[in-house]
Amino acid sequence: MIGRLNHVAIAVKNLEAAAAVYRETLGAEVSDTVPQPDHGVSTIFITLPNTKIELLEPLGESSPLAKFLEKNPDGGIHHICYEVDDILAARDRLVAKGARVLGNGDPKIGAHGKPVLFLHPKDFCGTLVELEQR
Image (cartoon, rainbow, N blue to C red; front, side, top):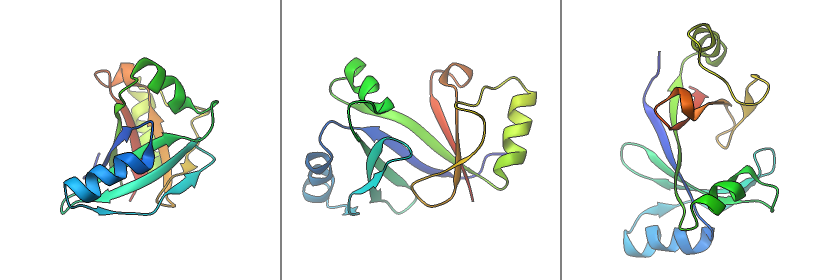
């Protein structure tokens, strides 16, 4: 059901400082900052030959990511994103197997302009999983 790894998301307190580490220290291709108000974050993507790294910074104090950074003040891996061919079929199959979809269960448009869903970390070995329609 799941396809390739789309990205690994890392929560950071300072997006520009984190981007500089990837750009200047690791020599990576770094995108511009894009606010994602529907998700309460700003994002930067690091392009790698086989996947992407998404850097996330809270967009305001009410961002769900702010709570994550309170518990993890140095930042850290926030979620992993897998591609799926049909996000609604994937959701229905996962729910039938007992997985919990966060929010109201309806896909939102994600950072790549495609439908996304998030799955409860307690159902996936402690890892927040994002599904993105291919």
